[in-house]
Length: 273
Length: 238
Image 1 (cartoon, rainbow over the protein chains, first blue to last red):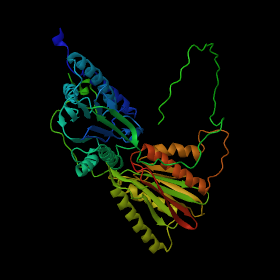
Image 2 (image 1 turned 180 degrees about the vertical axis):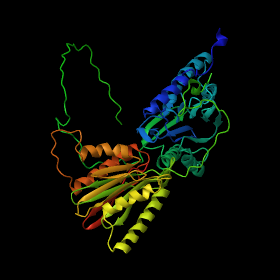
Image 3 (image 1 turned 90 degrees about the horizontal axis):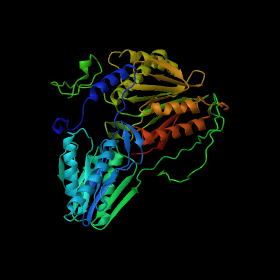
Image 4 (image 1 turned 90 degrees about the vertical axis):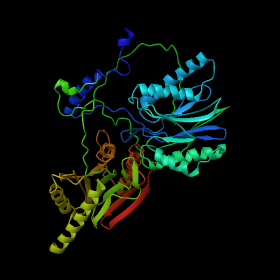
């Protein structure tokens, strides 16, 4: 029975989707697109470990959907992080899957996870989905074999290199790395180089923008530097655009009293950065 | 398991989900170079503003390529869309302006330029200039005038109009702040020059936050009976 179950994606809904899309476009609407993040991400190996960097812009076609999204995701408690451009939803799901798989694998082997293991699991999953999962990513971490950096493409291929860039701003960032990368750099010099590479993507690529996030991983510590640099000056508006009460027309008003008791009160702080 | 929706008799805008054979790629004579333009007409002034970023795909060609072109002492035109057609169109307009001046011994008025532009654009009805035009200037009585066009020459006179890549973001805000739409109990004061300039700066700052094609710098051409004055304001560069 198990042999007859279809593997990978079911494409039954393609027929329904195509019909829906035709109906929508007759009325002049278009189906919603998956949100791609257009992006600049970069990673490099320095003397004590690995540094990953990313910009913070998420775009919906050519409109900015999120000015400060997080592209560096954390996989395992000890060492490994990865950064993901590509389709935003795929990135979230991929992270969650990998996080749990890594934990299970490391419990099963009785050893701390290896970066190579994360890479192999990711590439096997992406290959199985034949590129339909649109995430390309950089995996970086420090394990018993030392600091390692891998890039993985949506179809499942990977590269192991001392410095890497991906996303729509990859060309801008790699030019900075090719100019100034040296093996065994000190921490501050390496952080500055990754920052400069991401900044090149932020200014020269329309799909990337806003801030630079860095993540410094060594064998002893993980330093997640969210908002490490803000190279862009946000414009300050001069006029005030507040509306006096009564500006919005009230057409009808219905008051329905709800008899409720306060049972529990809790405060959750919003991330408004 | 992958099937084409054509099996269900739907024609036209259908997406094929499998590869059937050779795919023909055509050369497109157009490119989209981004950019936003805006014009506002006041009691005795007109503003024409544009950002200065020229892009293509995900790259930036130039951070200093304004889209406002001065035609006469009382008229400025803003052109956005395909930069090649913007340049050609403005050359043609300038030549026609000279021809009119030599035949009629006077400068063209804003209304006359608008009417002429409409015929120039419709002349290319079947291979259009991919340009969104907005003319701003003073009419014969010295009052502010804005004329907005579509790529094939349809035009009308407006009080304010936004065109180009961030037009859908700017136009509703202008409808509210200048046209006083969707507001009650508001004193409808006519727009002063200072307020209009501040409003234009603020809407472009907001557009640069969310539209990737808008940014780098803003150039405002202020047209009054004294002539045309320019103001340049920096915008986000990312």
